[in-house]
Image 1 (spheres, rainbow, N blue to C red):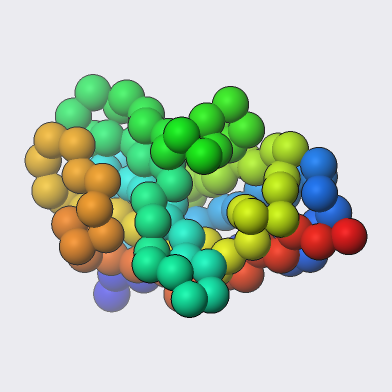
Image 2: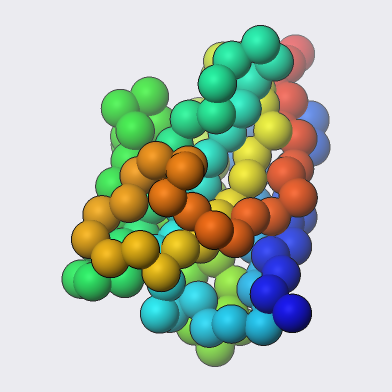
Length: 124
């Protein structure tokens, strides 16, 4: 059974840091493109960061570039999103996702497997 299980969300003050984890089971992450998406209340789901399976390159949305880092640990079959210098506008439910779509998939419709979501709240 394919499953992605997220952890690490919570409440953090502006300027703080959090690390989200996404553990995979039922498939091997290394063979898939991986992504983190987020959805704030009243807004559409947006792509935050990706690792592509073709060349292991990474992509970041302009809003998080320089502050967020995506990574994976193949031995643990787990992906991560390290978030630093957090801002109130980063508040959202964060989802990890995986797809075997080739190339550079960045749209949520291109991803087949999803975590349950974890809430990140940035507030003083």
